[in-house]
Image (cartoon, rainbow, N blue to C red):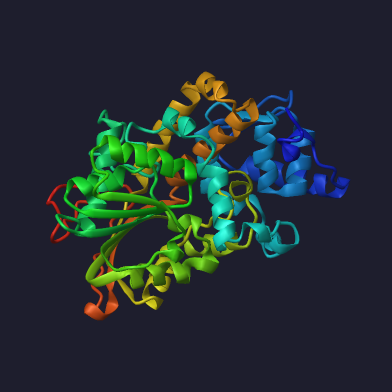
Length: 432
């Protein structure tokens, strides 16, 4: 392990004996109340459920005493704890997150959690750096575990659980669903905020739309442009390296897929204002967004987490309440809202199994064992969040509030397959 590459992982932090002792006491009590089998070092495992084996208890306690959940993740990256069913263990922890720290200590959260670094704020310059750290890792890396469409967001499956349906077809269902919600068809002027690797833009162009797609990832743009050319849609699709705040013009439709999570709470007002200002009269917005409960979002908002340290710097998952509030303040009304978190859990399972199954190929790209454990934990952690219903994913349609009174269909239960048909759409069942 190279300490220059992994400074927070290569060395166990120095921390006072008191903090280590407090962490040890809290962890043993909290984990003992959860449906887990826990093994500390060479001791026999106790409890029932998936196994959490802390191989190096002292290092584990010191890391958590020093860094809380960041330390928990770093300890896994360092190989100090294992699980016989990583998703199962993390699902139990996600479901029991409120029990891990006693209520009196939760009120003192600000004394021990880290604040988000100022340099992760999503200014125009900060956003470019935050996006680069994740999306510019390597196109080849993402191609190893994504489906052939290179869609890096939740699919919508025809049936659950364990469908044998083609993964790419499920991703296309998701894309078509969003394009229908936005009313994309022949002649539509479409703005896509967050390009990915170009699949949505290509499918929109095949409907006859003229697409302007913007991204901050140079790696994604390069490959998206090549895929657009190979699909024969270069005359209909432009892909620009451009911040969403710098886009001008009016569009009949705006689509943004799992982009809001990277915006940051401080910039949600300008994000939604941009969506509204870019709409031509009668235009529609279609969003896909990961969400979390509002109280947990508030607790996370200023906290520096393992995810913000190692995976998505500057990001924050919004709550449904925050989305409604910010959309309304910007002059947008929500006209459709469907949740289907179980489909994201299945998507993440497929990604995780592909990633771990191609570990040798990941290594051949130059990603070391610490990186591979980090990404395995990231994918499993995310899957567990959806399985525990700590997280959800939603597709929303929005239009200008001045077009009439808001009529928001009742939100569907997490796990339901969205089947709404948007007027003016293709009439197909759809999604990304």
